[in-house]
Length: 274
Image (spheres, rainbow, N blue to C red):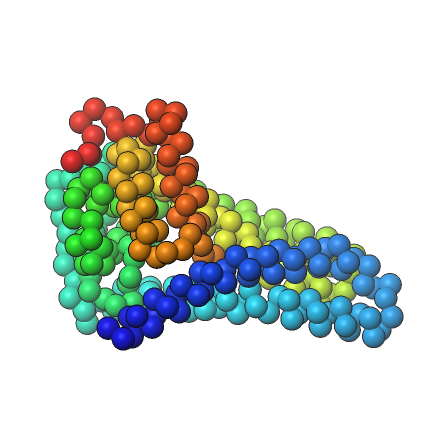
């Protein structure tokens, strides 16, 4: 219990700091582009000072991302080694209906797990497998909330090729811009820009993917279930900050609320509301 409380406290401070890291991230990108193209005309001492400043500014968001990547790697590895923890296959007619409503012909495998590394639902699109923590199922036992959660995860499977294409396009854009910048400034500035802009673009694509999964789930099952889930999660966390991979809960709620206001995203006849 003490370890869980310590982790929650650490996670809270990370969320609070995330907005500031975003500002540093964007500032470092702008520095590489605007003053960066003129650095070749500066004296050697000024060039060194500028490069040191950019490296220092860029180090914080990069180190923060490394922490996120480490957590994601541990999450994926723990899923593959899930035999050490109690894992239960979750099947029901509602799961099958949800998958078909999202547009999947083959229903992904859903597992409830007690793996402590898995503290929120996530999907391995390569294996079409969804992992949901047991405490999430206990927290959202109603099909009105649990099925939209699965609908969101199933949407990641449905959109996996679109997401991969967007990631590829993002890296292509980063490469082109980095080459252009390299022709205008010193190589180190272009390399820093390339790393920072790649991180920024991957984050943007990941946010877009999450918003798209929310929308697909809402179109299939109605937005009310996800709104209820996100509002409860926001109340429990005490923060609205997002992460490099997930947008803030408040933004996601607002987008879903607009579907209610416009009458879109309504559950079709015979749909999944409990």
